[in-house]
Length: 227
Image 1: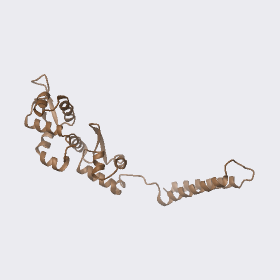
Image 2: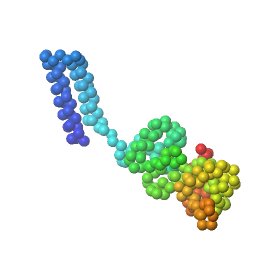
Image 3: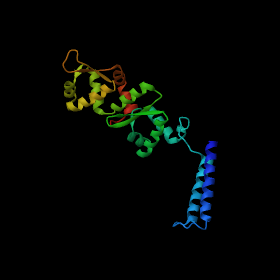
Image 4: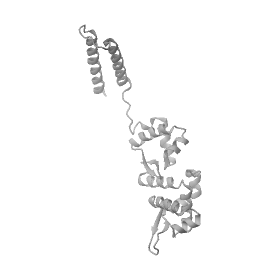
């Protein structure tokens, strides 16, 4: 930092000398008023010197990133509700989406949070929890959808059903069921088996069963009303 200050001061000094010399030279008659240019450049130089010497460049680091109340609130919200997407976070914390996105980028750049695209939306989770936090965030993001939750509940009560059986039982278009099945499979909430059938039949995984076992509490504390 001391070296940077020295460089800035030296630059400001030579810039001021150069501009003053040009303004004072009687033989130079440029089209633009050199006195005006000298004043502007000097003011800018002084402002730069003041910025570097008094405040310095405030780099966001893992040590100071949470010093800002907005980022601290964002971090705590994601800790409590992993898998939340941008607009949901901005709405719950009463922030503009653009403002929330900027601060979330800072948290991501300092390796405190991660993001992933799920269903066309970027969702966030903490780095601190490792693979488990990521898995939980993805699962909770998917289960915010009512159809996805209904499919999980149905499979927990009727394991070993294929896609058309699920669609018929829940009165959901089979294309919609297929889309959600793919997402649930990607999140490792269900697994498919083709041992005894030409069509895969699906079962909840251990992770899926754990989520469904605490289904009512999960809805109350994390999912809330379906999006």
